[in-house]
Image (cartoon, rainbow, N blue to C red):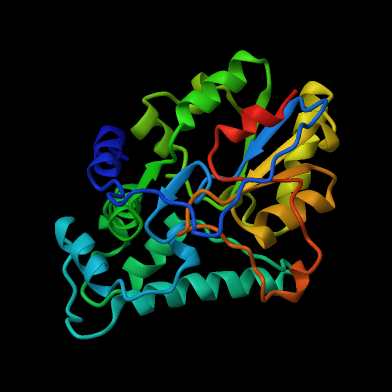
Length: 294
């Protein structure tokens, strides 16, 4: 991967529209005692994105974006008529189905494996010995279909939490390129920002996605082992009632629903599994987390 080029691409294709809370958003705050760690979701919480989530979570016509990505890498195909994005999505679903057969309820894919299989089955594409850099391709495509930008106040909030000695981690549906967002926009890696890499749980590494409890349990175990921090001493911040608030609550985390971005907020009012699920806090900007930690 040409890291500098990938970082520049993320910046250049940054989401341009302003981040706005939905009209009915109203902060619901209260003091939380004995919070020693804050664990964040990424897409739709720390970073706004064009689809309100990582791109694999959305269905859309991305055929031209995919063809442009291939063309810019000089990858030619003899198939000039088919919806290549549907073929790409079909590989994602096939790999997810294989994981379900292994007993995984919420399977995740490794996007580099998806790109490898896609190119190998693309009519007229390079053979396996001449495959281009899969990571460059993945970043190029993701930034076309899902431009991102930091949520307002992100760096200031991370700086303040770090200064207070609060341990920070991440539980996120993600791919290898997700950590690059921090370097692209904040010019620091996770550790420099105070986000402990050992307490960051990424779905692509476990090949299991939210709302699986496994991701939240993994983060809880790492905080307990590394710092003696229990789930009840941790605040989880996310924008999705089903994927974020429900599983975190099940394992005993304190929770905050981020309602600061109308594009990403997922209240799941029609989901019966979320009936009765309520976050401890509802925040309309990240800075409100600081107000609630005593």
